[in-house]
Image (cartoon, rainbow, N blue to C red; front, top):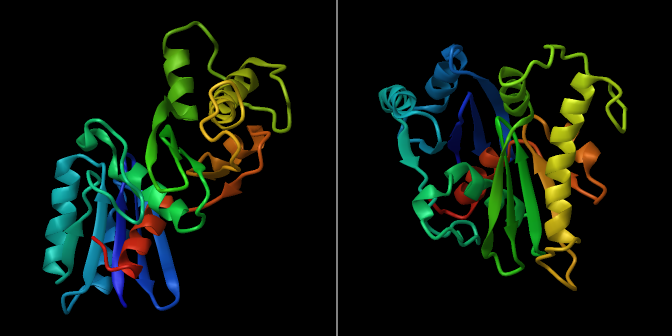
Length: 247
């Protein structure tokens, strides 16, 4: 088993190899630093090596990747998020609107638990998705990520631009800390409302919470529920498809 898995995200790319030892050699970078991605493709290419790609990036970036991958001899498979994968059945009315990154995050978590779960991916945007014990995606929510929300707030108010957030504060005793904590608690409150609160989805069942993404630490610190932090959600989801021969 030897494959390359690639996550073409909104602002960054990630890539890794999948082999007998699992997911290895994870690299990431912004789209203005593509030399390392080119190196990963060239090293991982040749002899029809399988490459599974999840892309929510603009099409011109995906096309650029395809040119490099095909030139390196990779056998590229772009993962389609509109159908069941890895034991998870998408729940959207319009399946084409469910980002493949979200479905793969659910696939990654489903491989770790057979219980109902919520997976929070806290990146440029924050997504929360809820899956029952049978693997049915019940739906989810989308919020601006911490940086995006902060920039939107500052752009539309007279709040001074100050990013000196005080680590460890429970409440904001200055404006930047108040903004940062507001975003974190909003995500945590939504998760808890649907897991244990007034809109609980899994009454009488124990649901697991998994948190990933660049702001995972900040969100996890705001949760009062136990949670598991997991890195490289999309790559892990892609790796599960490799292990089980899906794609």
